[in-house]
Amino acid sequence: MKKYKRIFVVVIDSLGIGVMPDGEQFGDVGVNTLGHISESVDTFRIPHLQKLGLANLTPLKQVAAVERPLGYQAVLREKSNGKDTMTGHWEMMGIETKTPFRTFTEHGFPPELIQELERCTGHKVIGNRSASGTQIIEELGEEEIATGSMIVYTSADSVLQICGNEETFDLQELYRCCEIARRLTMKEEWRVGRVIARPYIGKKRGEFKRTSNRHDYALKPPAKTVLDALKEKGYDVISVGKIVDIFDGEGVTQAYRSTSSVHGMGQTIGAAGEAFEGLCFVNLVDFDAKWGHRRNPEGYRDELEMFDERLGILLERLKEDDLLIVTADHGNDPTYTGTDHTREKVPFLAYAKDMRSNGRLAEQETFAVVGATVADNFGVAMPKGAIGESLLQYLL
Image (cartoon, rainbow, N blue to C red; front, top):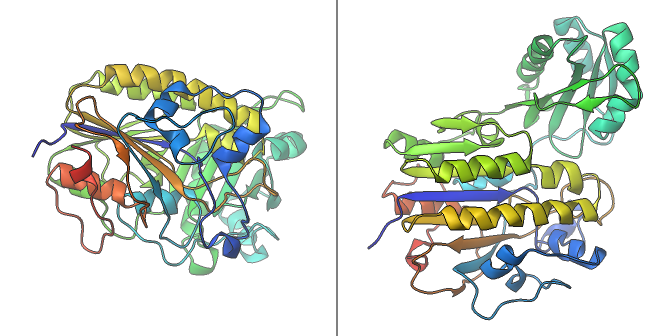
């Protein structure tokens, strides 16, 4: 049986395609990230995703389904208990999360945590509520610069985020404070999925701008993943974007940090020109961070169109023994209430230049088919306790 030498897994962060059966339990009714983007805009041009069969998975107003799509398509359900980035990516690589991460959206972080954070860092905390990062910097940036305080905020995700002005707070000091916050939030009642450093520049309101020196301090996965299994067998595991942060570096052999989703696709296209054997695992975060959370369907549409252009280049660069998988980690319907992720099914698009056939596969009960397929291709045993069944037999 033919195997692929290289597999590219590209995660369009938050591109859900319809509500999960249990969506109402997560506060999500009738959500559909991709479908509602299409309904909200006049034009929508994604010819390469169309050829791969994306519109065959959920109806789109401007994009027709195709009779003979390239490769295979499927709808994936999330088995884990959650709808966040780490849960989705960990599940792709074999981990089922049964206890969701803590969130502090409604009231901010408890006083006991804030007091301990202030004591250990030496900085007064301002903010401490759920907010948009750009908005809270605009509101409190001048105070942070004047007083040496640090802006702490959260979101609908399981995150503690700290803003610091690179010119006055100092980037390394910001990282030090985040490392302290990560240690403190290992405590069970304060346990969050990620602590994120959010540096910015500018001296006054209207001038503040976040920089690309963001750094995520994630929890380590609770068990071995397919990434570990590949690395232990000597295969390359190339990370593009925040994959290395999501897995806290575990199982990664080479990491490229991206400044944007466009940059991340450029890095992926570059990796397609390199000689490696194994997995290139890509996260493109702007769809989620810039447009989903900010409830901007037009911006999300524009980002998808830019992605589609670069997807066309990647498709041309693929070699005969390469496999491309395009998927997502959760939803974030930009037309829905609030600013939270949405509990959705996600697409699975698989393509190789010499696939013998094409078509629609059955709906899958877990994202973990992605990692299981990768492991199967390279003849690597799934880690103990990992979930997921391979789809490789259909993709050859």
